[in-house]
Image (tube, rainbow, N blue to C red):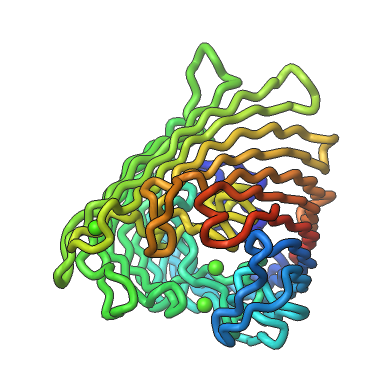
Length: 437
Ligand SMILES: [Ca+2]
Ligand SMILES: [Ca+2]
Ligand SMILES: [Ca+2]
């Protein structure tokens, strides 16, 4: 789930962090520049009363195993980025990386990986050029829109991919991205394909970002979905969104506001799409204190469908949502990783965060989860109350290379979750460490 992006607030800084990867070992020879890097990650995870006591359900073996799931995840990502200067204002660019990942132990609590899953696969592999603000790249590559509400993670890390929770894979397949960047704005046109685990669909679209400040931006996106898959109706869907991230009011510089509003419309083979999702959040930082305490509130809405039997799909499809920080957009460490997926969901969350010196951060997040419509996994339920979750976390970042975290989360089921799963509190302890060179 986790990357070094998480320490950056939404906005321009995040986009820069995404495109300008951490420089590892740099080699320069004439007009050729190469950056070689490696990232390592590991996690130990422990869940209790998995699925509220119903036990871990393995989606491949269809077995229900223990109520406690203890597992470990690992990955190694070697990477190389190349830049060859043909003239002062025309560069050829390219990158290649591979991910070796493994899951050991009981397998993850969602039952999407087990203790014998491991693999080595190509992650990024692209080539293109840069010239006078323009950049065109073709191949397997990372791409994100805004703070990852809809477009960021093109690869669901499941089955033999392994490492579901660490989730090191996010590149889109067979993609093309054309972008123009200036100081004031950025425009991107894209054609991106997700991996088969996410549905193997293609998104063709465009996004524009307008920068109001270093970490403050407005944006708008339109995309169309092409899909051959019969497992989920997506073909013909069109998605439109507008957003503002990291907005400040001049008289209240300690207050930061963000929000996005999106719709899914259009029609496919025998289906009309009519879904929406949005969020609005406010965070206030007490900047007079050295520990910079922050309090925040976010309301997130992902539509559900009041009639699952008709030809109108009103359930929001979370598409290629990403992960940038605790709760964004894995909403709830337990609920977001193992139970719900930003669909038919209404979430109120509040948080308190603070710095413990320059290399440590601490926080608590409370979430209240409701269903938008009274159905769960395609079946009616008597209540819309899904549950509430609390996460306590401690992040340690002693230097540019190391990020380590420890987190404890606990979800109490509401009536809707009780009717499908069980009535016990579902908890998890997460230990996480990454190093990148
Ligand atoms: Ca995958
Ligand atoms: Ca992923
Ligand atoms: Ca419907």
